[in-house]
Image (cartoon, rainbow, N blue to C red):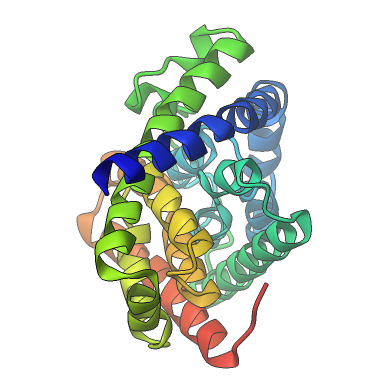
Length: 286
C-alpha cells in the first residue's frame, strides 16, 4: 500500500511541474515589473487604501504582504489597508489551483470573494478606528519575504527565481500529498470528509488555525484538502482569509507592540472563520 501511495504521489506531482514553473514565471515577471509602481500607489492611496490593498493583495507577488507589514509599521498605510492586503492575499493557492487545472471561473470566484471580504473588513476597520492620517515611518524593506526564504529573488534572473520557487513548492506538494494520501488510505476519504464537512463550525475553526501558520505550506495544505474534497468551500476560505503568507511573521518582527500584533492576528482569524461559517451554512459552492 505504501509503495502504491508513493508511486501515485510521484506520478501526480511530476505532472504538475510544467504548470508550476509556467505559473511562477508569470508571477516573477509581475513582481519585477510592477511591484515598485504598486507600492507607490499604496503609499498615496489615503482613505481608499483598503480598496487598493484588497485589489493589489490578490496579485501573487513574492513580497507584497511583507511590504504591507513594513508600510504599516511605518504608519504609511492604515490598519484597514493592511488587513485588506492580508485577507485578499492568496499566497500559494493560485499556483496549486492552476497546476491542478481548476476551472478559471472557480478560481476567479474564490479570489473575488477574498478581495470583497478584504475590502469590507478594511474599510470598516478604518471607519471605526478613524485612522485617516498617515505618518512617515521607517525605511521600507520590500524584499523581506525572499530574504526570509533565503531565495535572494532580486539577485536572480526571472527564470532562476521561478525555478527556485517551483522546486520549493513542488517538494511541499509532494510531502503534503503523500501525507494526505496516507491519511485518506487509512482513515477513508468519506470518513475524513464527513468529519469536517459535516460540521459547519468545526471545519472553519480548524482551517483558520492552519491559515495562521506563517508559511506558504499552509495555503498549499488548504488548497490540497479542498481539491481532495476533505474541506468544504467555507472551510477553505476561512483558512485562506486568515492566512497572509509570511506577512504576519514580518509584522511581528517590524511592528512595535506585541498586543497590537496579537489583535491584528485575532481580527484575521475571526474574519476568516466567520466568513467560512456563513459560507458553509449557506451551502454556497464555487
